[in-house]
Image 1 (cartoon, helix red, strand yellow):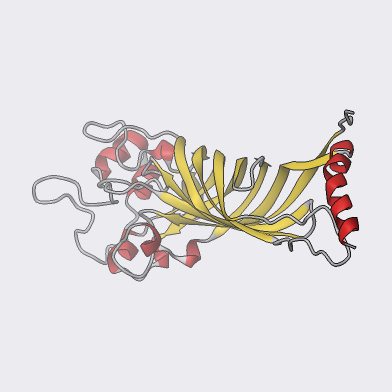
Image 2 (cartoon, one colour; image 1 turned 135 degrees about the horizontal axis):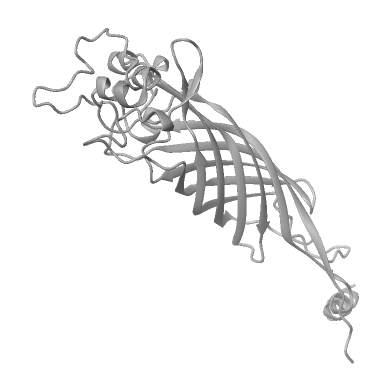
Length: 301
């Protein structure tokens, strides 16, 4: 028995060299899940906080995704992702009296394209290619876990319903006095983001697997929800951009007297928080398919 095993192990490299080699480097991804916005609008039942501290499940909206992964190392991989969904926020979702009185809301499509790197801190274990009676190979681990990070760009376009129930695009209404004397510059519909997160993948076969990713997006804009700084003179907005613009700039309920009026020094009352940029989260579940790539080699003698 020992001689048979030794002979087989000696011949194994030659057998492997002569056979077709199959590699699983390329992988297609498709998934769906949910989004959550972390910014000025809506939020938890408290004074506005930063990032996950202001999470509100009622702002959850759907997202779908597709991507391509390249993995040529057991610990590292790269992928390109396209993700499309909705982001939402509404002051009616929170019990904080100041944000409820502000009465702002938004809904925006989000289309994100990113390139990400992955580090597998729990790597996949491969099964040995041989099987001999009395000799057992290593057992294959069916799941992997990884951290990911990258760079991306995204499109957004916030809108909200007026008192008449009609939905209006907010960027064109200049709700914080964009373009008026002393007002901020008009913001762009495009911005950059940094995706960060953790992923899990379970392998059913060599080619098929399912997984989940929880990802956070740091952005470089404070206008995903059309809210950033202070209230601009509502009469000036109405004169320059019309009744709808004035309504969407300040739809406050009036429960807190003077909350949206200028301060004593003439500066505008706080409308948003300029200290932190907006961010958002994705929780996605995906299905992955690995392509096989055959490469034939010839034995040399």
